[in-house]
Structure formats: structure tokens, C-alpha cells
Length: 155
Image (tube, rainbow, N blue to C red; front, side, top):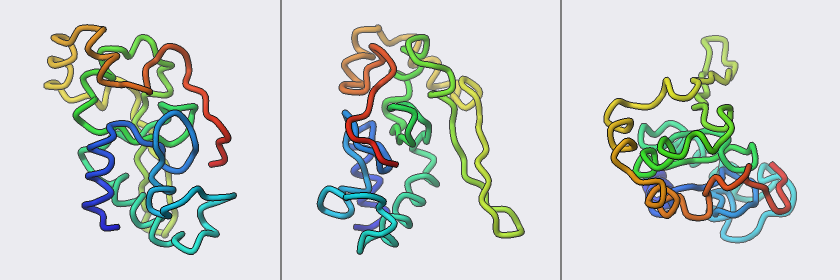
């Protein structure tokens, strides 16, 4: 799988978990081509999974947050208006944008941008024109009826 293919998968699905199991697909298992037992780091495609998750995390078309079960979740830009429209139904921390920063010393730091500071003005306008019902349909299985639970989550 290429980074372009991984991004197309996220675009098509709309909401994707990075590696946890839950009510939406997860990228790690799509890359592996099978369910992963234990950590994906030990899988034969572990390096490919790592690079592809980083490519998706680096895309400006993807919000990286903890929307589903508090686990790393990708939300494609096409669903941002629906997410903003229903923001009051989610925990604020679940909507914070996560950015992995590589420091000059080679360390990785996680920077958090609180909701709604990451939301572009045009997305706010689109969200204002979107009905609650349409937003719920757009989010599909990631609807905010309650904090989304994971089934058999590991990572």
C-alpha cells in the first residue's frame, strides 16, 4: 500500500482508527490484510504500517484525534463540518487535534490543539448550514450518541 492509497482509504471511510478495533475500520489491519493479534509492531508489515500511519498523520486532509474510544482516530476533512456541527455531543478532549512533532534532538513530542482552535473558518460556516440529522448520517458509525466504545481494543 502506498501513502496515496492509505489516504484514499481514509477519505472513502471518513472515520478510521489508527490501530485499535472498534465500530469503524482500522488502518493497521487494512495494511496487514488481516486481523492483528497483539501489537502491530511485531507484525511482518510493522514497518509499512508505521510509515503509512505517519503519512496519514502528516496529511492536511486528516484530523488526528481521539474520537473513537479515546484511541487515535483519523477523520477525513470531508466530515469535519459534521464533526463540528455535533461537537457538543462529544467530550472536548476527544476533538482535540494531535500533532506529532520531531524535535531537533530526535525525540517525538505530541502537541495538542484544543477544539475549536484547529477548525478552519470555512468548516465552521459549513457546519452552521448543516442540520443535525445530516451530520449524524455523515458520521455514520462514529455518531456521538455516547462516548464510542471499542470492542477488543489493544492499541
